[in-house]
Image 1 (cartoon, rainbow, N blue to C red):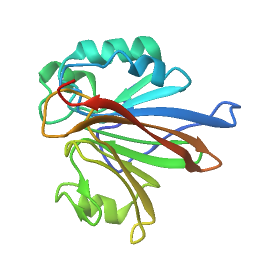
Image 2 (image 1 turned 135 degrees about the vertical axis):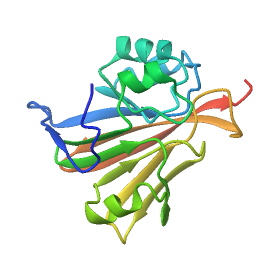
Image 3 (image 1 turned 60 degrees about the horizontal axis):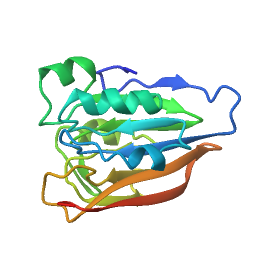
Image 4 (image 1 turned 180 degrees about the horizontal axis):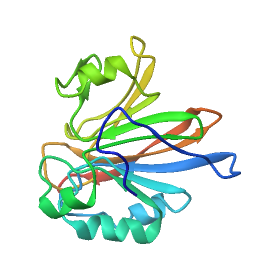
Length: 185
């Protein structure tokens, strides 16, 4: 699903009568998709990929499992960049979400997003890139930051990770960390 490439615009997606939306979140697959994620994301309503897809076979497979939202990352080629935006901004279940690949971390955000982030902060700010799992509330922006770490085999991370959470009543809830094993395993 594509959204505007302009970071400052949100698109609203109602929950269509659902009381909550369960999300599977991953990043930095670098061309490899752990098949166990299919079971981990089985109860999710959507899957979100925060960039560095590495090979469109990864997103093709994810889209077979559940509806998919994704952004491209710095290692992604022209095909991925033509298929997915750099930024996705949307509102779902009363939660304003901004997902992009490179954004830094609280309070040291990347220079390419900081001005827009201060001008119009989302409720939930998602990125990848660092390969470091981090979920942190930023009180200055009144925003929850999520980086699911890296689900792929390539990089400097020790543990491959992903996240699962629920959007309900205008808030992210029930966050779970999924550990997929050591990077080389």
